Image (tube, rainbow, N blue to C red; front, side, top):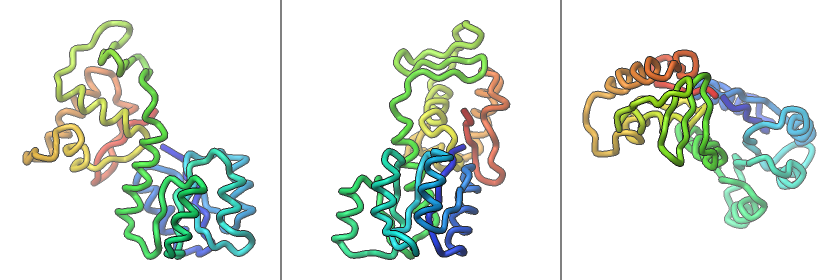
Length: 215
């Protein structure tokens, strides 16, 4: 689960994004002004900021500059090419123009979070340790024999840790885009992973959606 700062002065849009992030398994931290955003950055150190560039008290680009190393996705009505270029050159990870589709926003958030986490290669999940470099898995220090598909599924969950993935998305990533079987096969393999690795508490079921690996 990631804490994501939503800097948007329109309360209805802010609340809509909060609900969307909650469905993904994340926590949305609302801020309605630039000053509130910078205060939240200092106190909360969110994993990502969704930033409207037109704020009532200061320009969004100024917020970006002062937020320093927090990844930013600009979510704004400013659709002119110079604004897009300025946002990306200022360090934004992505630039979304209003009005936007919630599915698109969700996908772009997941991409940025995944990009930020990708460099890690060694994971400790309770009593289980996964070494991506050697493609090895141990539980209580003993090797665990996973099938090719089980390991592919585990790798997908790790690459997208703390992010809710739909069954369909898991199938695409772990089975491949050309797989046409029932997505309930994901449930079967998740159950096996939980049993083999003791991850009943870490692999969460997202109701009517899919799964999320919490670290």
